[in-house]
Image (cartoon, rainbow, N blue to C red):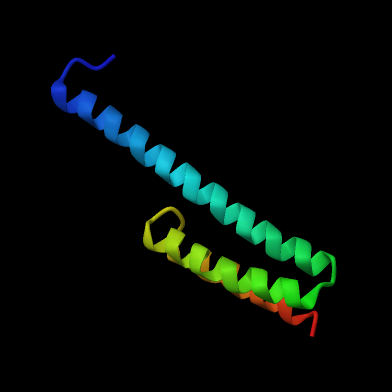
Length: 87
């Protein structure tokens, strides 16, 4: 265990950040999964709604630094392309 005050503080900060990032990442994956499930079910309306809900979550995760901006852009692009295949 750390002995310095600053090291103890960093441990607490890292734990808080880890939990926050874990929650955001989990939420992100759930929203992406909803889009994919709607596409697999060939439900165009539900897929579009899920995509519109997922895009802000993806962008927010990128702005918070949980995922890289390129990763967010790639996810949005691929999901949009997937939803557009339904017509």
